[in-house]
Amino acid sequence: MTTENLITIKNLKKTHIKGKQALNIFHDLNMHIQTGNFIAIMGPSGSGKTTMLNMLGGIDKPTSGEIYFKEDRIDNLSENELTQFRAMHVGFIFQFYNLMPMLTAYNNVELPLLLTDLSKEDKIKKIKTALEIVNLSDRESHYPRELSGGQMQRVAIARAIVSNPDILLCDEPTGDLDRETANEILGVLKLLNEELNKTIIMVTHDPEAARYSKLTLHLDKGEFNQKELS
Ligand SMILES: Nc1ncnc2c1ncn2[C@@H]1O[C@H](COP(=O)(O)OP(=O)(O)OP(=O)(O)O)[C@@H](O)[C@H]1O
Ligand SMILES: [Mg+2]
Image (cartoon, rainbow, N blue to C red; front, side, top):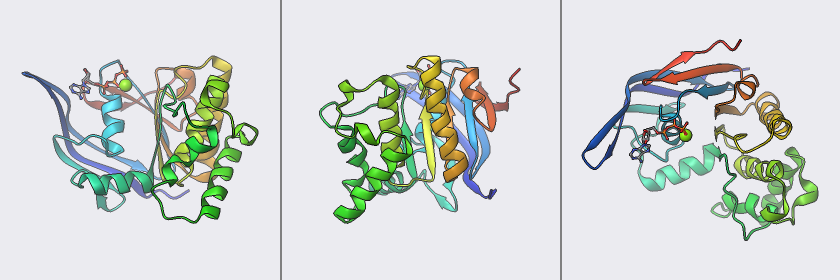
């Protein structure tokens, strides 16, 4: 496994402003995330876990400080550059799957490829491969409403990996699933990390889910601390 830094955060400050209210989430955060890591982030509601994922994925920006993806600074990119950055490097996975209800599993997985100039054959190959990885090849013409929660999350994972991103940002990916289905999804994430060297950052409230990671960090009052799971 390589140990290069995939993400570097320098002197990051984040304040959410809402009306007259200023909410300081991060004060002066410095950290590295190495390629190939699988990090679970735990911490109280409102501590800033989703805010952090959004900044790492280029959906939200720090108030000050810098975020680097490999050597490239990403926090100061334009909206167009960020769209491109996300399309190439980042896959998002959410608690409630965020699938398009009017599209089949296959067409949901296809979405991130619509903006690319890949040939039709290449697109088909990538979609089929992604669906195979999550073991859902036999459901490609099903609509989300015709799938179970675990299957919908598999489609969402296939969509997240179809463009072969470096990093997967997962916000409570098993928060809506029963224990057994959650473990299946966590097994898929572990496989993506171990076999395909995807760097994974997963927010979770569930200590059982955190056990699938290589490192568990606890976010509280703007600081990440290593957490020992008993
Ligand atoms: N766009 C925004 N504008 C103003 N305040 C925000 C915004 N987004 C988040 N906040 C506030 O920032 C704090 C951190 O929110 P965030 O969603 O990152 O927390 P979280 O750790 O993901 O919580 P949870 O575990 O409940 O999902 C919260 O108090 C929230 O109300
Ligand atoms: Mg959250």
